[in-house]
Length: 357
Image (cartoon, rainbow, N blue to C red; front, side):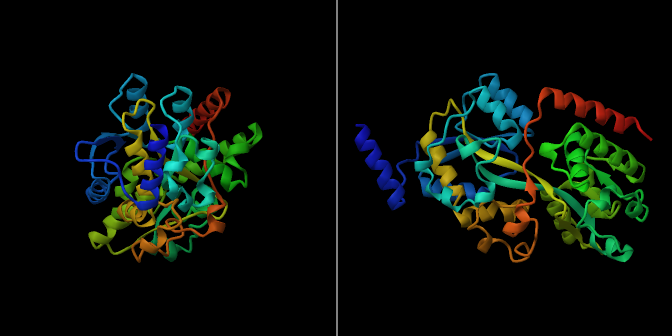
């Protein structure tokens, strides 16, 4: 029987046939708005099965639900920083790479990261660069260069845009950016490096308008702020909003030459999955270049699938964030998991930053 199953699997992978039917259901637990209805329908047609989705708003919500024993899902899309916690809690099952032949389409720069060596449990799908979004016309008028972290941390630059800058309300993100600005690797930062980053942040803070995790998208899109430290997918949305409402300016987004942190959302199969076969088929489907490109065209995400770029919207192909060169991507870092001691030290320094004037 096992030999027959292996033969059927081999035939399905080589011929493109899918052994599923209308009564077969793939249950997905996903980020809200992450997949378009179109791509779900395409997979259902390809698979001959049905996809049922449930949604979560953040990783903590998803992790808590699965840790509490929820067993109704075949697939989840955890961000890189919770993958190790999920594997330690045995919430994910190892992937069978033989069932994912399109894995070859993923650019090597995004594979075998520290959070999941050899991609035993996860495959990257959506990448978001912590970077600088900005009002193109205002910065050009003021002669301010957004391609360096100095636009966020150098008081000499900030004097030109005081009160028009926001940064994320996230200790990890802001400290990582400050470390890049200082020429340090956030994953290898010493105590002295962290103190230097804290001091750089405290010097810059008087020039910032706010710490913001949500409102910066709208504030940038309507022109109330000119520079933001945030996520590339959010800057894409701000740019689209400004364009569609015919604002008299454009929103740009560029990587910084000192380096950037890249966040990775992944595809994974739950340990309790009833249909890991369908989950493998979905992962393989999403690693096809044409299918993967639909995610980028929908949300402006950097795409780990190297074969996706020919199918990007024409205006996105030239973006150094959405479609980076291999040389640019080398400067992008996935943050490692902090130790408990490091988390406590970071929390203390963040409190110092917040109370400083």
